[in-house]
Length: 359
Image (cartoon, rainbow, N blue to C red; front, side):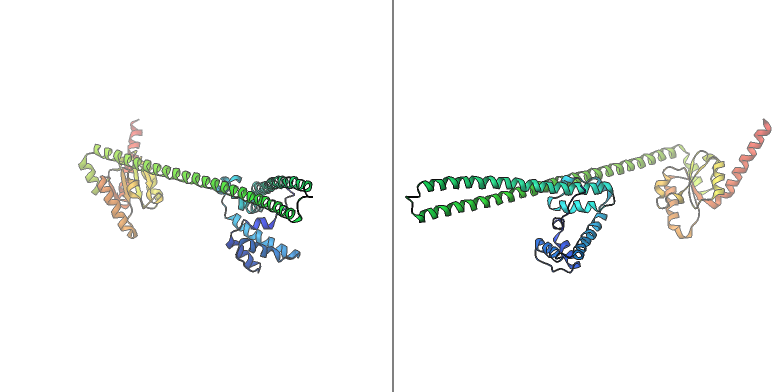
């Protein structure tokens, strides 16, 4: 891995045409029509000058580091060497070697080396097939030449020239077929990479669909839980005398009858009220610390609603009172209950004292 020779031409071949044009402009190169022409224009200007070659590498590294920063950790987790398009292998591999993460850097070196070995193997394979075709043609030519030598005494010079020309044409045709075979192999590899990429995208889309279904199921379950809580609340309300609940909505609230119950309070936390309600066995829930904007859901688990007048939120207070009235939940202004709270706490203290004397 340490002896990898990174080829700028191979790396640049993985850039898009627009990226190459931008790179050429930054290096003050002329923009050409095709990717190959732009790459040659970028690489031809150094002309052996070290400082020019360094500038080219600096711009390549700057572009790739910027692209590397845009890749999330999740993308790296799902990354697979087999899914990288063949034409981008050198670029992606070299880009990963610029990472400060040793695992990502090793992954880039592996990808770059693997692509280099694959190209060497492909070139060797094509050369072997081409050599076999050429050898067969040469053998055929040699046989025909030997036959021509045996009968050269009876064949005029012009006929021999025509046969040699024919053999040369066959040799040229064999060479063209070898190049065609190389192109066909390259096309097959490209098609294979495209199919693998399509398979990965389809798997990702399937995963997203599953996640959406899961979210819908969770949302449906949440709605069902809210409905169940509302049903329980309605059942609890049915057990209370209707007239008593109605009176409590408009008049004083007997806090003693709500021991062990929850009181939803729409106001900033008041430690004094908090302590006194706890002393009465009432569980205070301060809605301002939970969610002021969702009173309907918060009331579904409470038996008592208290609020503090707020000139800026009169419409919200009206909504809270309307919801409490709809569900027959006792609802009163917090300031009006302070005296009631003090009285209840005092009575509770006196009852304790009497009990102590009786004992």
